[in-house]
Image (cartoon, rainbow over all chains, first blue to last red; front, side, top):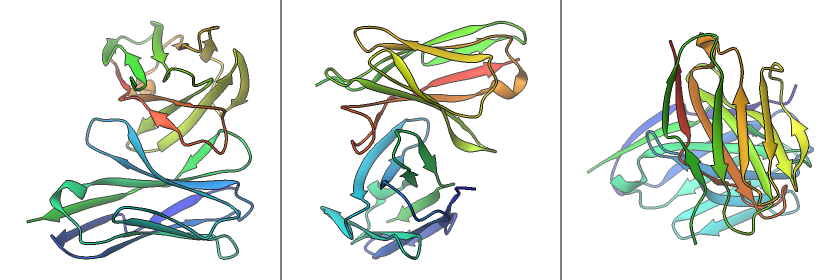
Length: 111
Length: 113
């Protein structure tokens, strides 16, 4: 069964810390992996998309890495800010537009 | 460029009724996907349409159906509503389907009483 797991489920940190969010998937034959953020009561915002042939992607203070062989991805957030507070979701696809989502990491960054 | 628009934002229905949700994708996007989000099950894939054809379907009963029009707008219908259908329904669009980033709308919050 294709499953995606995210650890930790929740994280509360002071502003300025560097963070690592983890995502693992059981079937390593992924086509791509995406990271999203979701603010309360809102839809999802795409942060980064990593193709299966890539090892990492960067956007501003965000860096996502992918290790297909071990079935893992990490999202690194540098110098966290209160505005980063949200739920972060990773999702994998297996050659279709169907995404399998993880359960998310709820992040709170306090001043 | 306008984002993905979902209407209505909130709906309250009673058991046994049916409901239709609407999604307007980003201009030029031809793929539209639907997801159900609940606290217990998280985000689950319902179906995906590309150029008016259903390409993929998730593990939901036949009460859940959808369609896509020639202008790429999509509708989702749920018949004979059950309490367990209460959820946030999210629509996402992309340029060409897989390997393109998905852009989500803000969702329709459906409450079944």
